[in-house]
Length: 219
View (cartoon, rainbow, N blue to C red):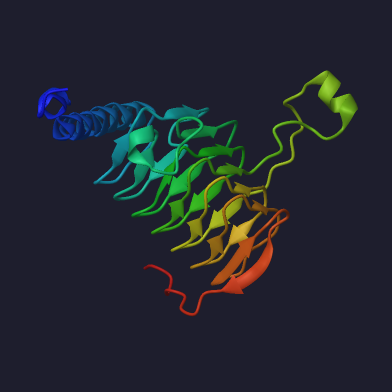
């Protein structure tokens, strides 16, 4: 091979990086625009600074069931999150369910499903592929499942406080309250309340540590 041949025919890496950045910017602009339009048509308020990268799946049974605060981020594009994703961010509200995001909060490739209410505070980070369900999806009684697999479903509200960090692939189940400043480890299955400032992990999740400083609740 002649000297300089390889260098002359290698595709310039900076062009690949530039192309990726342009695609990311266009995706965020386009999906933010279309998501905000969908929310407006569905009567769901969204504050200023909404950022949506990749198309999320949104479903509501009644107007206003989804409420997003200021500077909320919804990620559904693989290039936008190094942790990777198994599917787009999905927010679904069945029956009387509702989902509320506080200011400066966001999620990546999460599935959030409500039949009663899921309240997410301010400055909350929800890791890739996390699942948050305030209901069981199906009744536990086999006779009821035969009659109607989606009726008579147990449901209890979920409350996630301010400054909570939830690691990738966590599962938050019905009736759970997570206190301000708490951390839920990756892959944790949370079936009971997590006190403020504590670190929980495992299946079922249990206390494994604490945070020295817990921010005061946002006004």
